Length: 407
Image 1: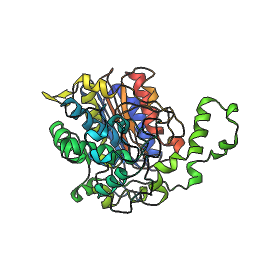
Image 2 (image 1 turned 30 degrees about the vertical axis):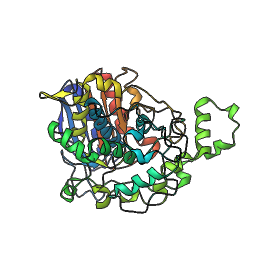
Image 3 (image 1 turned 90 degrees about the horizontal axis):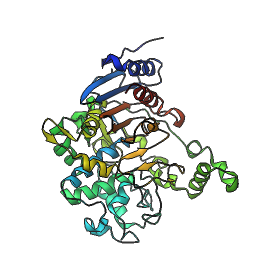
Image 4 (image 1 turned 120 degrees about the horizontal axis):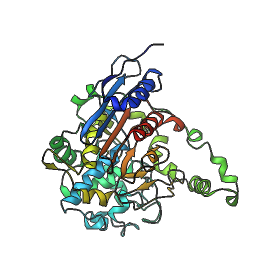
């Protein structure tokens, strides 16, 4: 069997991580990937291997970037955290305090925190996703601004897979004047040396890995739809939540762009890469994400520069919603102000078994990045080959489990 050497650095203490990562690449489970771990202010793991393209012609390098999908949501949440730190934003305020035009059609009492913890009831477009260019942020914002909520704001948690980006992104723009991508670049990425962008330039493309996505139909997405016909009193709580979520159909609202062929099929296109979709199209390296979480988890400062204070981090990582999530099949997925605090599928429960300090996010392509305040830890795994749900986070899950057996 052909092997693909893994390059980079791994502290001997973390050899389990290197072994798992190497196996994932050489078995062909991963096409190309990188993993980085910052622990107590030191980058103890920074490994990369495989290929950037499906033909295996371009080798994955240390600074290779890849689309990390919903991992972007937590990067956007870090921008929110900095605005809170600066006293410019109160997440308990109504959205209309910053974005008056939003207050119509039953959305008048929506709070900023509802956007961030997926309780705004706006997880899809009531008239279908706008047929436009991904770079036209204002077209998506205007559609959401005008429509009625799908669910009553604040009444339930429904994962805003794509719409989170335009809703939270508009709040940032209204408060600061800059787009999310520009704010992150100027306030966080450049000052702290974070290898990550929301909205690429054409010059960045040569550094990017291609994403290899699975094409799914509705039957593949919800193979358990027969659960609808089982009486609820026969089901345990979690399966009952799943049944209610499937009957409600919120999943299809939230992921309608995929069904219409306007979303994931274009993630390697210039239009998608250059757009600023701060819920789904951030690009970066594992090293960059591990460093960001390492800084946040170690007091929020680095080289005499403050990103946010520990108090602000505690505020935004306080749980304010825990499902059942009507989009994510009734799952008990917990959120703070933009950060995912618990997600069994992505096996980030490996951390909460040992500590309550976990905060981060997972992405549909298989990327996972998180911090651990109790252990001064930043972890990131990024890859370019999507897997079926049962194996989607296999590599990151195994490395997280090994990591928490070491520290």
